Each structure stands twice: as C-alpha cells, then as structure tokens.
Amino acid sequence: MKKDILEKGAILQRDRETYAIAPHIPAGITDTATLRKICDVADKYRVEAIKITSAQRIALIGLREEDLDDIWTDLAVTPGAAIGLCVRSVKICPGTTHCKRGVQDSVSLGLKLDSIYHAMELPNKMKMGVSGCMLSCAESALKDIGVMGTNKGWRIMVGGNAGARPRIGDLLVDNVPTEEAVLEIVAKVIDYYKNASNQNRIGRIIEEMGIERFREEVLGSHES
Image (cartoon, rainbow, N blue to C red; front, side):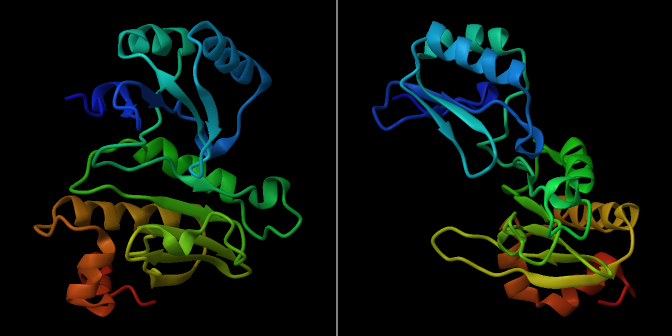
C-alpha cells in the first residue's frame, strides 16, 4: 500500500495513487520568476490542482510517484516541511514591511526563525507563527511557539495548536525588547523540547506540568 514519502516531501492523496508536494516559500513571499517556474512544472506534469495552503505554500496536487524526482529537479527549490516530525514552515504576517497596522518587523524575525528551524527534526511536529501586531494574522496563539509584536516589544506564547483538540498557547514571556532576545528564548525552548522525555507536542507537556514549571525549566529565573 502506498504511503507518504517523507524524503521527497510527498503526501499521498485521497485516490491512494497520486501525491502532493509543497515547495518551501519562506514567509509566503515569492517573485514572478518562481511563480512562472511553478506554473511551467504544473503544465509539464499535468498536475490536477494548484492549492494555496494555510501554511503560506503553493501545493502541487495529483503528481505521479515516478515523476517526483524530476519535478523537484525542475523546480530547483527546497521542499516545504509539510509532513514528518519536524518544524513546519514558519507562518509570518506582513508586519511593518507592508501592513499599516504592524508595530514590529515580523518578516525580519520570522525569516530568521525559518532559516534556523525549518525542517529541523524534533520529537513531534512543531508549528511557529510570527505576527507583527496583536491582531495576530499569523495565528500565533495557535502555534507551538507563537510570537506577537506589541508596542513594547515581543510577546512569546507556547503550547498552542489547532486540530481536533485546539488549545490557546500560554504566555511564556512578554515585552521581549529585540529580535536577538526572541531568538535566544526560542532557542532555549527548542533545546528543552529536543531533550524532553515527553514526546507529545508542547501544549500537552504544559498541560501535564503547568506553565510556571515549564517557564522555570526553560528560562530559569527569567520572569514573564
């Protein structure tokens, strides 16, 4: 029986015969040359559908298994980490780069996080979101690690997820003043999680141990 092909970023479709792939598009920001290349590949291999995903990727649907290697060669881009126990594409809102409501540069911070963590293997899947204001267009409160810009800096939340049993993330630390400080705190969360004996997603770990203990074990004396 066919199944997902992790090493090729290929997700088996409902027909149990064809696959979908999603090239990595950091922050969902691309250019016309990349879009043309995707369209050329879609035409060449007669894809069934092209889907804009909720993770800011462009999925090509209805691909034959024997074509997958040639398709990735023609695309000449990195697969998006859409499956597997790893960090998925970081969802990023336009922030101060484009949005009139942005108060922090979510694109700059989000791209740094994406470049460090995208596709990193972990005990379970992990999603991140970076929003440039509290409207949270990147749905940061529903991510395992979510970051939101405020007038005082950055708010970091942990343990959010959607799915069958959705969970709003807990506040880990507020008023983080700089991108560098955010990156340091996220690194501590990732390091803690990589070495955790509990292989559930972060939200379930927090439910078992409580956010206060989680904060203490991850950040030590760092106060929220």
